[in-house]
Length: 177
Image (cartoon, rainbow, N blue to C red; front, side, top):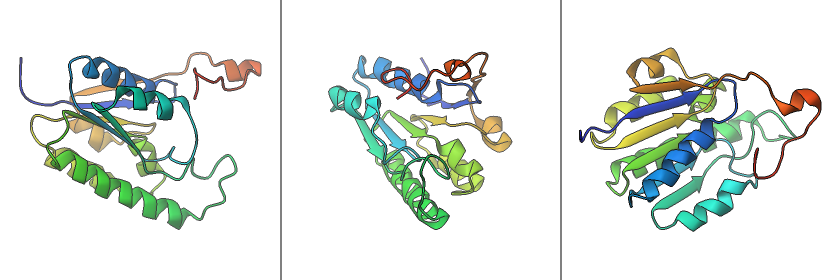
């Protein structure tokens, strides 16, 4: 087995990007790997992984930095607030990645933060290029930039084929959040 960590990207308009990253986290805790997940967007909302992640401690740490979904669903915060928080998430990400305390770091919704111009694609490229060789790095979120896709080792695009919302079914606790 190689010692080099992978750069994994889950992107696309379909559901399941964060869930796929959490699946790796669940699997890795079974091998006593140390995982940190930093959430760039979802921070102020309550959702299932906030509670379930506590059950995976101490191997799994979740850091919710974001202020909630940007520009949608009752977001009244100025964009500058979201930018400031996203830059703080970059700082925390670099700190955790360079700490040597983790085998896997998940940067949840980082691609979406770039797409919203809260951070730059260069911020992401710099994180990837400066990560320790053995660290596995997972980036999630729609709209992954070509530059990120190019240097990643594994890229999976989630494509929506059918969604319950199209039939008037609202988001479901335990499935969607």
